[in-house]
Image (cartoon, rainbow, N blue to C red):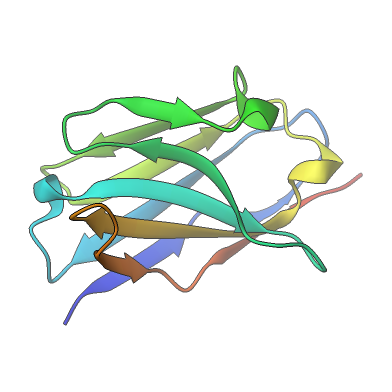
Amino acid sequence: QVQLVESGGGLVQPGGSLRLSCAASGLTFNYYNMRWYRQAPGKERELVAGITSSGNTNYAESVKGRFTISRDNGKNTVYLQMNSLKAEDTAVYFCKAERWAGATSYWGQGTQVTVSS
């Protein structure tokens, strides 16, 4: 079956960096658009960044210039490099695989990112 497994979360001080990874299995990874979402306590889940199967990227305004999404099709993995982290970046981060304009999609279980001094 399809599995998306996120890793790399943790506690970091403001201004620090983390790199999240999402390893996919059970699907033809290079066919899928990949997205990172996050959900903070009491808030709705929001799109952070996306990368298409062809490598085009998009970002939420709040993370532009600080976060970078990338993918390694040989490793079936998508990454989110997060720099200059702020307290408001604290959330559970989820990866999502999409195909057919979202008609087929899969979610990971999430990884916690906490930005605090």
